[in-house]
Image (cartoon, rainbow, N blue to C red; front, side, top):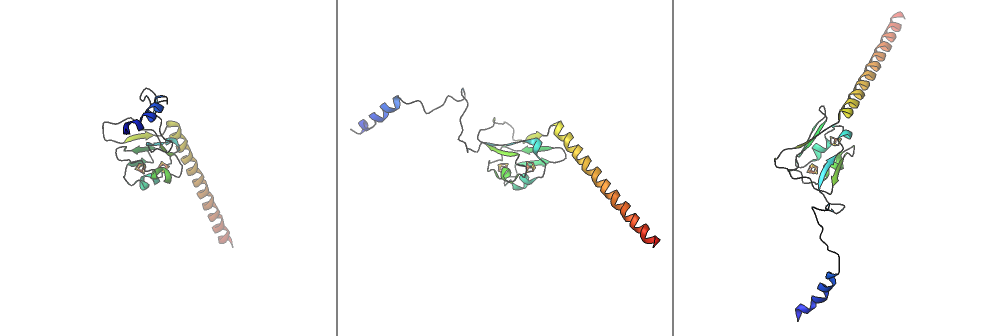
Length: 151
Ligand code: SF4
Ligand code: SF4
C-alpha cells in the first residue's frame, strides 16, 4: 500500500524538534541575507543625495540644510542600490521587517542636535579658513603691486 511508504517518515518526524517557531511570542529569525528594510545612521549622512539619485522608485528625499533623510517604505522595494551608492556607508539593508504603517507617507529621520552643531562648527571653521586664505592672497597681491610701483 502506498500510504505505508509515509509511515517511517511520519514516525521519524514525531521525534524531531518542530521546524516552526512561536512568533510573535519569540523573535522571528530571518535568513542572514534577507532584504527586510533599509535603515540609516543619520548622524553619518552628509546629505550628498547619491542615494536619491540611485533609487529607481524615487522613494527617498534628502534635505542637506535641514539634516533630514526620508524614505517612503510603501515605494521602496529594498533593492539596496541606495546602500551600495552611499559614499559614507551609512545606509544598510536589514533582514527584519518594519512595523506596518497605515498612512502612505514617508518616514523622516533627522540628525541629532549634536551632529547638526558639529556640522555648523565645521562649516564655520572652513569659512573662516577660506576668508583667511583670501585675505592673505589679497595682501600678497597688494604687496607685489606696491613693489612693482616702486621699481
Ligand atoms: S532600497 Fe532600492 S527602492 Fe528602496 S530606497 Fe533604496 S534604492 Fe530605493
Ligand atoms: S548617499 Fe548616504 S551620505 Fe549621501 S545623502 Fe544618501 S544616506 Fe546621506
